[in-house]
Length: 309
Image (cartoon, rainbow, N blue to C red; front, side, top):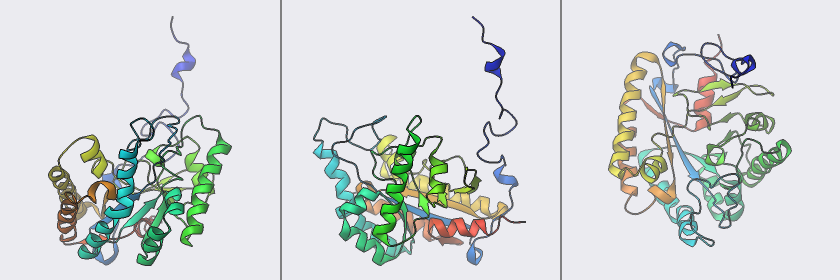
């Protein structure tokens, strides 16, 4: 049985993108970006501070990094908790030692449960973005739009109330979205999000309420992706981070500023046998000439200011 002609028709089929969410452009042909102080490489260290429920529902799928054994999976639940109770404080020391200005992607449920940790984050003054309500509160295709809107608002408004700050950034649990998620984020007052990993630089992402900035938070050198999923060694992770740093600096010399985005988790790299590898990577990156360590919002603002004209 052959398909009818309607199966070959698609309104957005054209050169470049097959949708209308953002404009097609080659990275090498865009207007060069200049970072503050003449820096060539903006370094964005994004720390995932996550809450994985012990009684996860797994709707519509089991979230990566979550519980994998029969309830109660205390082994994995307590390991994730370790990062928020122990590993994060090793991160603080490493950031201070190497002059890193991180951003923290926080599950709102964690913020509700860990007032001492939130007090520490507020005292340190670094940026806090919303990482959803918790890691099992997923956003997905087919989800009721009103249900998802309530989930977004609960997460963003709750975190804003706890931190006393406007929340500008968003990272979805498991980086999973529905077709409605970007529109709902814009309606909730979010300026930028980092679920899409299809670029090395920011770009404007269209929503019903106006543009969001899509920020390039790489999965490829994320600690959990490299060590936990691909099963590479910690030394290999350091090598990959340093290689990315070198290549991006070289590109920036001729094409304008670039961004090195590191997504890391204290339950993984905050372990005693791994923290030294994080320190090794930070020492290398921050020791390069022309590096600017900044929050995600500072990078987004610097990029946005140069997009007119």
